[in-house]
Image 1 (tube, rainbow, N blue to C red):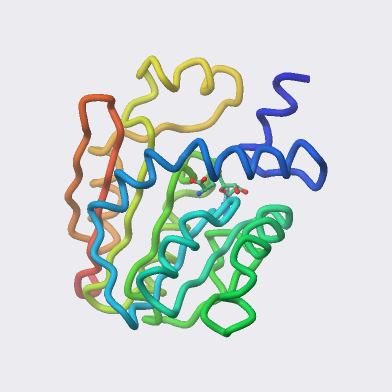
Image 2 (image 1 turned 120 degrees about the vertical axis):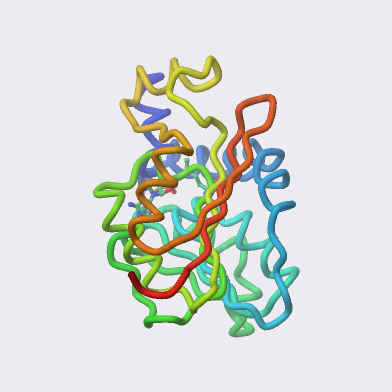
Length: 206
Ligand SMILES: C[S@@+](CC[C@H](N)C(=O)[O-])C[C@H]1O[C@@H](n2cnc3c(N)ncnc32)[C@H](O)[C@@H]1O
């Protein structure tokens, strides 16, 4: 039962546990997300897409910076909870939140200034296909931002979750190799808690 509840981090289910997990993640991830967002500059008019948006708290934050914010999540319960949190912005035409997989992003080539992924790439499969899709939807010079609570599968704060839920924690060196091959230039920061903020900028096609 404990494990069943925590499986909601991978893909929140359409039940009480799924909705509870999404609300808990909105609160529980805020400190990490706030730290991560401090690496970003979002200007009015920027088009921002948050992938694996979960309960929609990062979308709510980006809406305080720009009027063009989009969310995508392959859990329909995430889409429902995130849409509810941001319903005024959706009503006003400032925000759109869609159901879909990061490997098939329903937006046009070169349409986004910033694509973000908070606490979600652990579950993306195939990872490189998702990264190529992000490259496609970004404008030239646009940025892809990854924020993870762990930068290594051996870190104490993540080990027990990896053992229980079987997901991938990527080393920043591995992410750099994967993203550079696609045509991103990469830089990252790991803080003393082991939190990862990773920025990849779209360069010309390789
Ligand atoms: C751990 S939650 C993080 C949610 C939110 N980003 C946050 O930081 O609170 C992971 C989210 O990513 C979504 N997700 C996982 N894999 C995905 C994929 N391949 N495509 C789209 N969404 C995905 C899950 O449905 C879930 O809502």
